[in-house]
Length: 160
Image (tube, rainbow, N blue to C red; front, side, top):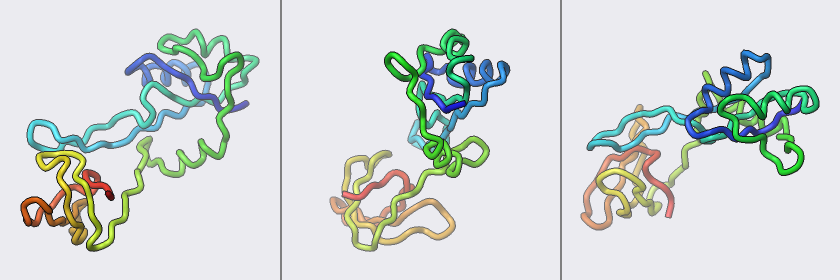
């Protein structure tokens, strides 16, 4: 038994996982919580960590045909033969998961470091990181263009 990556039709990951699980095949379908700036506010949305991909543990000789023809599956990743996914990779993903959700590692910023705002009303503006706001997933930065202090979501900034 080996792990394989399966390419699915768009938005069919959950249905494929359910069908494969019902057939006795172990699957891994990691998801991630993403904060999106929609209609002037941040909303947390659960999305696929690997859109259109899931992982399945099965015996290639016995189950490959059944997996290929499961509703929602486009193909098992690999040209002539399915490519095996290393158990270490699956282990790393599982170690980062809690309740099916992958917890991303947040970037660490040093005081005075230059950052870029990636989303929101101040998107594409640069700032200087000042500090993390305690108890929140937010950071205080000084906008270069306006010389104005601003509190933003940690995930919406990146190092320059």
